[in-house]
Every structure is written in C-alpha cells, then in structure tokens.
Amino acid sequence: MKFSSPFASLLALVSIAAAVPKSRNDGVIRIPLARKSADVAGHVDMSALSAHLFSVSNKYRQTFSAFEANTGYAHPLSGKMRSSIRERDVPLINQGTELWYGEIDVGTPPQTFNVSIDSGSTDLFLPSASCLDCAGHKMYHAAASSTAKDEGKFVSLSYGEGQVIGDEYSDDVFLGGYEASSQIFLAASEYSSNFAYPDFQPDGLLGFAFEEISGLEAKSVFETISDSGVLPERVFSVKLSSTAGESELSIGATNPNLYIEDTLTYTAVTKEGYWQVNLEAVSRGGSTVASNSVSIIDTGTTMIITTDDAAEAYYQDIPGSSNSTQGGITYYYIPCDTIGSYTPTFSFGGRSFGVSEETFNLGPESDGSSDCLGGIAGMSDLDFWVVGGVFLQNVYTVFDQGNTQVGFAELA
Ligand SMILES: *[C@@H]1O[C@H](CO)[C@@H](O)[C@H](O)[C@H]1NC(C)=O
Ligand SMILES: *[C@@H]1O[C@H](CO)[C@@H](O)[C@H](O)[C@H]1NC(C)=O
Image (cartoon, rainbow, N blue to C red; front, side, top):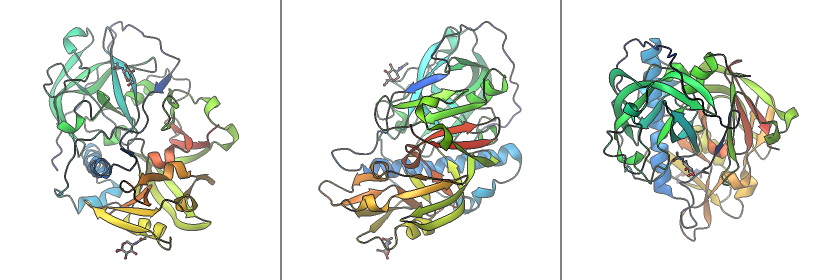
C-alpha cells in the first residue's frame, strides 16, 4: 500500500482574524449515529465487517508509516506489520463502516460537517468543493471562508478501504464550540468509492490521536484546541452506544451524569502516538486469557481485534465454537443460545470492566444460523490488541491528554 505525504516542515501560522464563534452546548457534542454496519436483515453483515477490518489493518499500516516519517524511527508495535506489507487480495465492498460521528464547524463564516470520530488516527479530512466523487456529502468551500489558507501541498491519506487525495488547507475549526485556529487538514478533491455517500454517511473523518501518527505532520483538532490553553481540562470523553441519541463526545470535560464517579480508573498512555495503554488482563469465566498486553483504544474500529494466538486462546474450549478466516482476519462463532456465557472482562489500571452479551454478540453468521459472531477477532499481522466499539460501548472513556492517560468508568 502506498502512503505518501510531503514531509516538509509545517508553518502553522496562528490566525488572528476574527472568527465567528458559534456557541454549542459547552463542549458537548451529541453523536447522532450508532454503529451501522452490523445487523443487516437479522444477521451480521460479514462483507461490510471484513471490509472494515481490512481497513483497520491498513489504517495501522499508514499510521505506523507516518510515525516513522515524523519521528525518524519505527514504531515499536509496527514489527509484524512491517514484515507483511503487501497488497492483499480482499474484495473491497462499498458498505458503510463508519461508527460514530458528530458535527464540526469549519471556516468563517462557519460551514458545518459531520465527521467520523476516530481515536485511532490523527488527521482531519473533508471533501472539497472541487470533489467530483463527493456528491451527497457537504463540501468545504475554501473560497467562501475568509480564514481559509491553501498550504500549497498535494497530499494523499490512505485508510485501506479508502483513500482521500487533495490539498492541504488550514482554517479555523470549531469542535464543541472550541476553536482550533489555523487547523491543518486535507480538503479532498478525490474520495475513493468507500467514502462515497450514502455508504459513508459522515462527510469526513476527524482523528483524535497524537501528532506523532499524523500523515499531515500536524496536530489533531483536539490537540490544537488543547494546546491553546482554553480547555478547563485537557481531556475529551466519550460515551458510545448503539442506541440512537445516547452517544456523546465531551470536549474539555467529562459528563458526570454519564458515569459512576468512583469507578473512574486511569491507566497511563505507554507511548504517545496512539492512545496506547497496558491491557492488564482479558478474562473469561474467571480465567485469564491474556495478561499485560499492549492495547490501543480505538473508537474507529467496531470489534476487538487481537493476535491470532490470543483470539484462539480466548475461544478454545467453548463448546460448539467455530471459526473462519477471510483476508487475514479470523472470525469466531459461538452458538447463539450460549454466547452470553462467554463474554469477556477487560482489566485496565486495576479495575475490571465486563463486556455485555448485547455488545459482544454481533449477531447470527447468516440468516437463520444458530451460530453468532463473537466480538473478538484475530488478525495475523497484529502484535497487540485494538480495543474498539465492542468494548467501548460498555464504559465511559476519558482521553486525558494533559496527564497522558486513559480513564474508564462504569456507565451510570
Ligand atoms: C449530521 O448528521 C445528523 C444525523 O444524521 C443530521 O441530522 C445533521 O443534519 C447532519 N449535519 C450536517 C451538517 O449535515
Ligand atoms: C478454529 O478452526 C480450526 C480448524 O477448523 C480448529 O482446529 C480450531 O480448533 C478452531 N478454534 C476454535 C477456537 O474454534
């Protein structure tokens, strides 16, 4: 997979032009959409899911490359993927795989967009007014924004199942009412079909990870806001739910109504780049299946993905379990009537958090099947755990940039 980005030095000129502040609910963004790709006609949409997981693998490949370009050394987790960088023969299907999205405003006067919320990457991209493949999406009109600045670089970002290509711009971006002045982002003139509307519902994608893995060599919108010193606390927090209207992103604070305060437990980010933390233990039915594993907290991935060995260890001995491998990803099935007895518990920072049957069971393998897809999958070129929506829907998550730690709490 080709990943390219001109790694010239960035001149992030801080704009002092008056932006039009747009007040939103004090840093709170309600995220309208629930998970979309699962559950089509009463069974899990395997083709959408495997396209999505294939894209996850490529997202990590790209962000590892960006890390190396930005820092001059290979990311310690990139080993297995570096040795297996090759094109894969996987059918890429145009299916919506976006997870949770919310609104941002860009420019002066503000133009509003829906963006997918991705803690596993750093950059922001939006369709530009010149994008021919972007019908149905809202497009960014640089000419209509008095604060827009063309940075004079043509860049492409690859997200595996999709690619976006276009001009790097800076403009003022408003997230939860907070301003990221002169934020660098990609105004894409080409969207690959996987980002086409309506399969991909939001207009663009907003990364929340650290600058080290940015393909644009830029801070994330959140980092720009946080570094400007305006936030009460340098955190963003999410509640993710598959029930419409229940998901929420808070900028600069946590929402104490959404979690049980004395259960909030922090664990240190072990390496800045991803939101990477030590996963103390994964257990099932009281026995530990994995301990002290590297994990990445990723709101942009539906499932929990781990190494083939760890996934195999998780499901072994479950009566009636089976598995199938597609495109380097091994999916495991458990009889639907017993899957609720085999849900995992994840421990971070000394506290255990259970995964509910509702979030672990992704649904029957096919129509009328009595086998249901389990929420943990194995990926042959992973060396770590990607902790995605299957786990994150069970907790309130605090991404604390100020203290470089991640907090999890029981939902209220
Ligand atoms: C964002 O998505 C929500 C839910 O689909 C929709 O109601 C809203 O109008 C969208 N906003 C924009 C700017 O398109
Ligand atoms: C996965 O499939 C292989 C081959 O059918 C089998 O040997 C193995 O036991 C399966 N593992 C689980 C946990 O079902």
